[in-house]
Length: 221
Length: 269
Picture (spheres, rainbow over the protein chains, first blue to last red):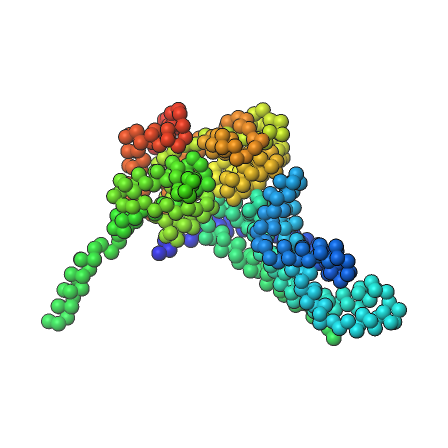
């Protein structure tokens, strides 16, 4: 039996602190996506480069990022690197962990997108006098981004939700961390986490709406 | 005639099934099991032995209470932040989990009188130059999220306006971070600090000073409205001290010396 009386007023008073946390959550997610997309493009180029070393690096990265828990990746960014003498703050560890994860997933998404772009396009571009890099940059890349745009949006949503794993490495500035701190202080667990859930939901809805608007503007035929 | 027979049967059935508003104390006695939430990464209060069985001061305390009630004890492991959800959702009856009795928390759950009191120690990484607790100013400090010392440290950092506070999810991570140098200093209970320094699991840490806090009085908790159970547990805690069992458990789990005084001079309770 659920024996509890909700006290919303007490939790509601903490909303400003939670919204501050939500801003940090967004900040981490956006940064991790921007860096993650750039890294994923680099990994994609590595894989196409034909160099065994470069494609080896890219494959290892993608394999680890996709086949281990995000929690493990963030934990390693904090405690694992510290074991090697590199001390990262909780914020940096969380950002690094999520960025690593994003880059791995996005690289795989990009690979899928590339399969949908016929090789003949690159060859046509080459025959028109474009260099290899130019052909990739002007012909393949824009299409690759367009085709994988829905999965990029998904990854952005996933990045927002992954910030909640930051508490395991001592992060207390993001939405989940702030909620956890307030919970310890007041024991109003259900009210606080219900509010956090609603805020997360709204953030995700905003991202989806934003992505829809962007795709309508950028990808008109 | 038929109607009154039915009414009579209904009345009899009601009387036999007992009072409609049995409280938690009745439920425990009736079910024959007392389910206690205990934090098991908080030695010497709660930990696991080499066979992975729960052990510690809090575990014994729960067993004693179950024995007094004449029921079986069931230890349910929780983390500090999970104590309240476990209690409220009915997974456990009470928490014997070193819960600090703050006024803010007492708005939500029901506290007994203190069953234990902690003093806190300042523990630092060997590489950090610090001679007393005030040396924490400007350092990167951390503690287990949701504990009395974490709340105290966070307030201190805000008061000083410099340094950084990091809450970790469990005691082991705090000491790992301290040992690695991710944290400069932590504040933990003297019991935990001594156990961790003595265990040798965490290299390069030292106890520096006592933290100047009001002793951290901890109570047993249950749902706020369970006055019958709270009343029983208050008497139980009194009896534990009276019979010498409190001192016995202290000697068993914490070590030599006298256990903390659970009364506060100059006030009734």
